[in-house]
Amino acid sequence: WLKQVTIDLWIDQAGFRTLRPSMSELHASVDATGDTSSGITSGVAEFTPMRTETFACRYTTVDGLPTLEVLCVGCDMSHDCIS
Picture 1 (tube, rainbow, N blue to C red):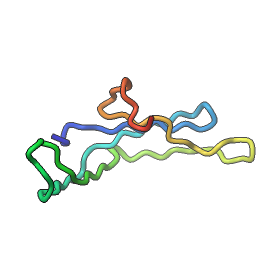
Picture 2 (picture 1 turned 90 degrees about the vertical axis):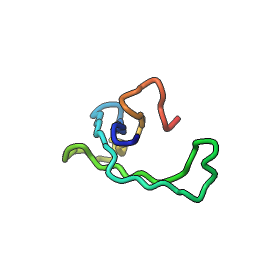
Picture 3 (picture 1 turned 180 degrees about the vertical axis):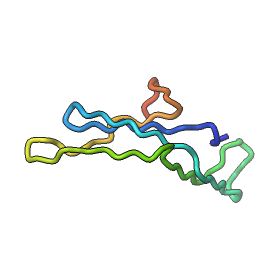
Picture 4 (picture 1 turned 60 degrees about the horizontal axis):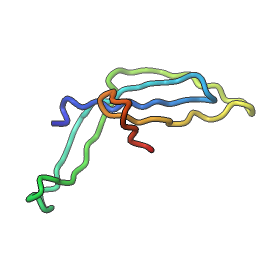
């Protein structure tokens, strides 16, 4: 089911220069030793960038460092996975 999932990162530097790289599923593994009677399993999913991008961020004493502000799944902004 992860084949169709995208992860969107919203990275912000000092209130502007918003960067929005998107990631898609590369590889997933499921732990088959857990309790699967509830349908909930555990595992690890690796995501890779959908396209190669380069972002230029300024660094001076007055500019803040880039900060990950929002992480959402499938462009669903109604649910922020960081908060």
